[in-house]
Length: 322
Figure 1 (cartoon, one colour):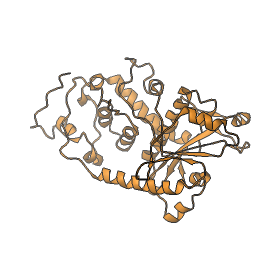
Figure 2 (cartoon, helix red, strand yellow):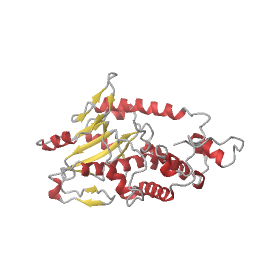
Figure 3 (spheres, helix red, strand yellow):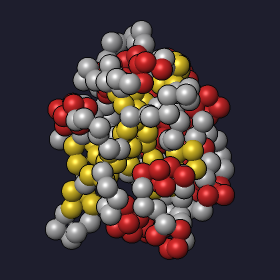
Figure 4 (cartoon, helix red, strand yellow):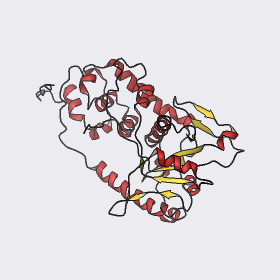
């Protein structure tokens, strides 16, 4: 099975560290010969930090607690594993079409539904006019915690959709009668005051890739990615969590991201990836390092120390034979 090294964590890591070397090494993990020249092995880390694993587990437990409340809401769709926890499901285009054909359909809330990002997303957004004509990494599927799908009934309000090129389009009133909106929300075990660009970039990535998914599956005439009501559902008190009883309550408690104001975060990462690909293949040492406190948590720290001369006595590993 191919290792899918490009995922939303690559984006969040760069947003947090702004380290081009880390981004370059993340991107080149599965197809290093396309990126690195010489294509040498990296120096392995001496130790792995477990704190991030602990935080991930705490986040997973909080997600399941939120799901326990959400599954009581009418219209919430999910599947459970043997431990009675919500598990990943597949976003089937046929099921979306069946929902679309329902008369007076109630809002639909999908929990942990996964979709495959079409290759057109990467070829058009990241590598338009690529020198090789290929996408130089393998990518993971997307799985937002929640997707809210509904017909917007307030026809006096102006709604806008996100287009494949990242621009927005105002939807005429009559068109709202024939299309359903989709919003994406992630659950985070963090307080609302601590939510920022590291979390928002995941939502922006979901939104843009989902737009391409709809186009790829010929669903864009019936569904659109609404630029409103997307964001992060933060850590809530037990009292506030128990008050969530409708899909509208979910949105009310969500810290929303404004596409027009925040897409610069995503555009910055896209621009950096484009620039690194223009340089490739190149020596790893040519890519600048952003030395900072977060370096201590980076998987590539020993390799950077070696190339920067902090560990000059360590022998360089031999390059791969392939």
